[in-house]
Length: 110
Image (cartoon, rainbow, N blue to C red; front, side, top):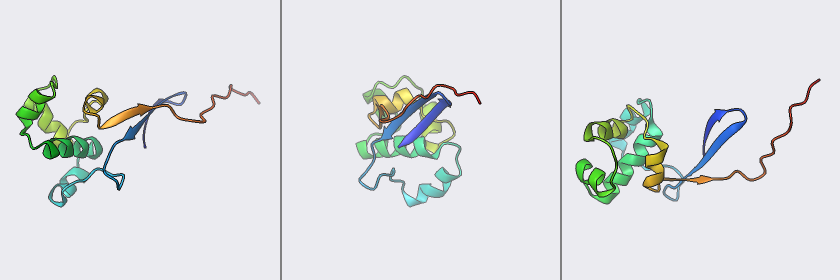
């Protein structure tokens, strides 16, 4: 699970839909570059999705009606900028879930 925490009282939880091992597959030649990038997780998700589709970047963008330039898409794939959550949801790479058993306890003063 990927937890994206906006602040202590407001958490968003996303479950990553990945291969059976539970981690995005990254070709070994790209692994070092991705790990050194600021956003390796979203980069590997979008890169794997496009590569599995067999489409070139421009074709992938058009096929999925992604409102982005190819230059920005390249930055996503190399991990220079994070892929927005809305795009990951659009491509079914993540899904929103509600955490079970999360209790919001009132603030207690000592």
